[in-house]
Length: 68
Image (tube, rainbow, N blue to C red; front, side, top):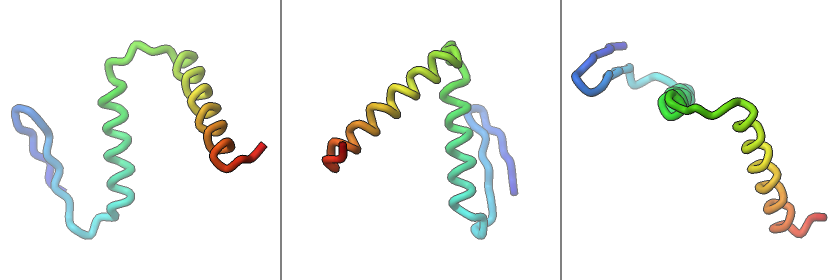
């Protein structure tokens, strides 16, 4: 593995045999950290929003499949 810092970014070079699924999971986590780094949201607000979104998605799923 090679790490290189430029003025604008950090470059990571990995061998081609690295598991792409694990690498994608790591990149997703790093993207999450980057996106949320300046967030001022409270955990309670995030939990409430998450619960609301999950409920809405579940209701749409059930409606699409005509499940009561």
